[in-house]
Image (tube, one colour):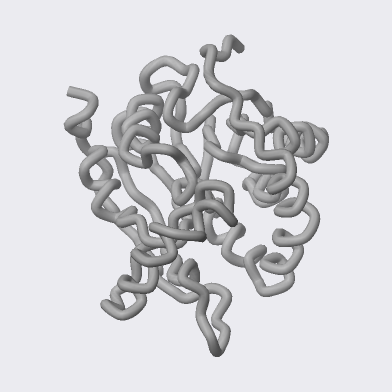
Length: 222
């Protein structure tokens, strides 16, 4: 499968720390249950953007005939290739903002803890809308802008200062649900919760998990 030329996003230090240290913590905190909910009921061909080192691969149901996992970071992608050996998954180099597929190739798309760190989430969502069939689904599990005005103020401060530097481009307060609508998706299911649910919440604790259906082409695709 051809891949469009692009600027490689090399984040080797963060990639090794994330895969080797940060990820086991959330897994122990219960993220595996959320991964199962995220992928339950999917079928056909699925594209997963920002697949990281492949922690979702073991949760895809049997009805999914193929997963094409897109990951731009070389260290994480190499680990994803190893994780894909026991699953119907093809791992390729690529960025969410420039997917190397034709229009309407997939029955569904998956974005899991990815849209916080892409360069432009509106472009990434427009690309997912382009490659998914009309009526196809986008499953999402992301941390987002919270309903609390106080925490929004905290997010604005950390996003303008240290957080993106420490977390390799991550932004805590993106408004995913509005961006989905602008891309042509209609949110049909959404569960909003704090994760991990600690006494002193992180600026990135507010999460949404849900389903959006492609009902129209967003403004960027017309």
